[in-house]
Length: 73
Image (cartoon, rainbow, N blue to C red; front, side):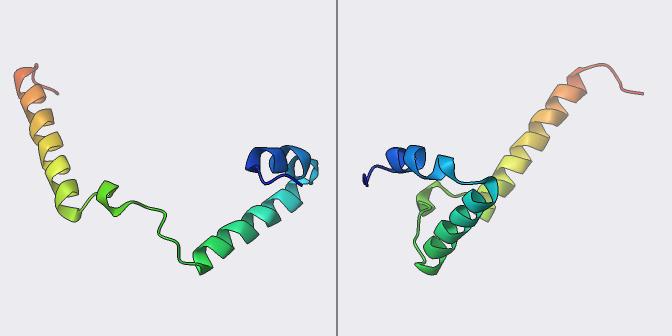
């Protein structure tokens, strides 16, 4: 059997029923969780402050657009 994930998928996984595919996906994901792999690069995550800054900027931008437009009823 090949070690290439695409070939394994084509030769084995495609032949499984949807239920068995879901069971296989669950097994794979559970194993990754148990290994406690850090797959997320923390430098790419948003801090609480980043999210507050974005929300603040968005609200300021929306206020500037609507203050320049016609009065809304």
